[in-house]
Image (spheres, one colour):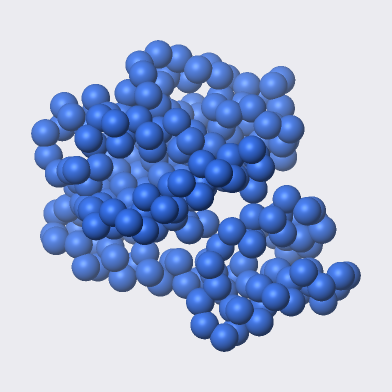
Length: 250
């Protein structure tokens, strides 16, 4: 993300609301978290530093987790985008099933990791039933650079443009995992609001019983009506001994 774009985001109330959902760790992050709510440049500076600190922390935790998994573990990357996370998991000797519904982004994903040993690419969105759905691109979407591609979603919000929408395949993820008939070491879920329906679906179908680690970015900051659902997810993550949930993915 460019510095100019970051500065713009820090002026948006929804961005500050998103940051308040992340849990600060340690004295420095706690100070930044409190300072973020100051008016003007001081608050924007604190928010920018806090986001960077949280992102570095989560990246370190993810790398530690990737290293700790048994060799040749099976992982699933939902919302793989151009393959950054898939690539890291492959580098650590794991197998990865990467889901990416957007045809333009999937093309780059295939170019980046499609020929790598252990990579299985699925051009589809992960959902609760087989079918098709409309994928809406972010309002900042640029088909030449793929800028804004991480914001594409099946969930309509004010930040997405219907005129750039494309119909995509949807896979019933619970059924897909059941057909694999193998335990999943790690499931990363960054699907821009699709988690609201997918997590309960996987829970009902018993899919989590065969998954060891689940990394999720929840998007209640873009839809405040989902705050109670997000709180329920976090309580589930806190009280369940298996799988191990990380609900603060960025």
